[in-house]
Length: 103
Image (cartoon, rainbow, N blue to C red; front, side, top):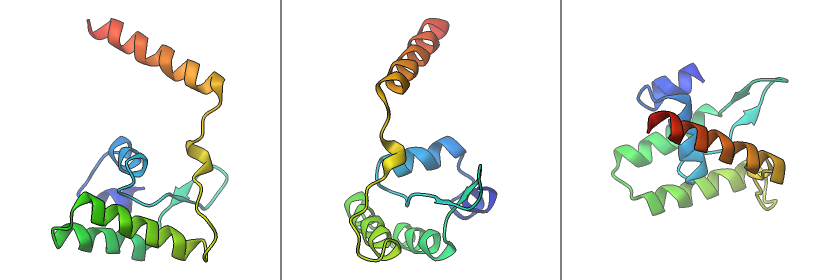
């Protein structure tokens, strides 16, 4: 994660995962029981597209192409983004607590 943050401009963990949810960054690869990483060529390709001034739609298309290449033609489904009903309820409670604490 540290090298990915350095390559992408010292972004936070949260901003990288937000970009993933928005389709602007590739999904992580499980490299250990509790660790993930990203192929360096995918990070470089996304950075080159940003430097070239590509639009978000172009970058989403690139991300889809990178996922397709990684999955060798199989349809890509980010299963870890799917949340159970209990996880959605917990996330909603966290948001409510945060909103109440800042009010």
